[in-house]
Image (tube, rainbow, N blue to C red; front, side, top):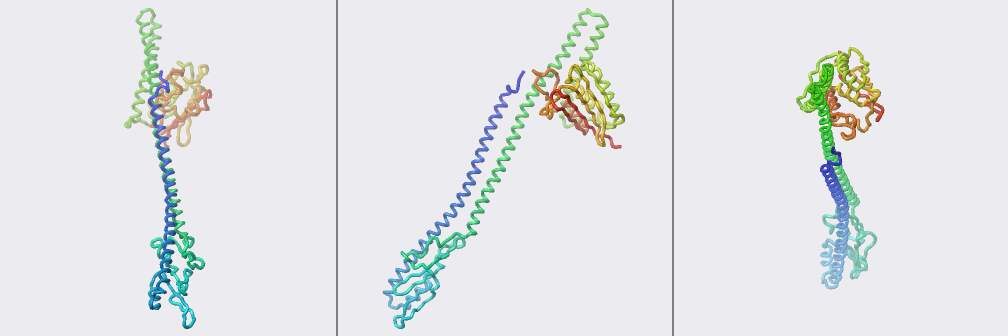
Length: 444
């Protein structure tokens, strides 16, 4: 007898699969963290580039003003016509004005404009530099970097412009921060989505593999159970036939043996019907032949037919059947479904008190067949599985009640094919069970 531990290939496949899933999730998590960190780095890099641009512009402006200062100082001493020189001086885009004292009148004379805080004294005069010139050197970044000269900058140490006079536009800073947050949200949300998809896919694959293992285990148990179920009546038949063949028994005993042989034949026939029905029920073209019927009368007939079964198990069936309930049913299929539930109830009831209560009543929509026993009960964690094909609680090597695991499966298939449903209620071990079959009523 194989146990679950012996299905090692599937177990190994599950372990390998889980390892691969963990590896993929680790790689995906690393990629998400990397992309988020890369987004932060890009934002810092963009800000650093703007600060570098400020430093370069600051150096270029001061270099330009220093060069102009030296050139003007030299030219004022050497120019034969200072008027023409001043005109050419004001044509330079970096200079807006020049003021000097007239030697004849002693008055201050201004050429151009003096509205700049960037200036320097040269040769008895003052040169005023263009305050918009540093911003002009920013080029394409002039809309991203603002220039705000502060104080009076007379060119101390040949420096007029300082990096502190530049600042990155608040809108630009906000845009960089927003872009960084957008990237973080994008990769966090997309990454989380892919993680969830991976986990969902992993769960579905794991569940499929697990179900495959469970089905394989149940099929193995089914083969063991069917082998035993078929061998028992066949062994009995062989013994009975050998006894009859010996010629050592009288006619009365032969008649009893014939009855027992017929019971074994019926039992074999029932098991074969179950196996064939299980195969048919999985086919897409499997159909019932329902017709309008008096369910109350049919159920009484079913129970009459089950009486020998109940007596053979030293049990009894109590009936509480409401008359006149009409439903559309397939007589033979529904009989097999009810028999499967009643037989289970009898087999799993306590040997000293095998009493099964069958109740039929109805509400506005459904007829309800309730089959209650005082048997071993069904653990709550097993109740959702007992209608699965080949499923039996426990395993073939330990359970005392034999069966194939097809009865309740076929019962569910049959009831659902009638448009109804079957449910089980049990508080657990030792508290008995109640199976309820609901079938649609015929509209009046």
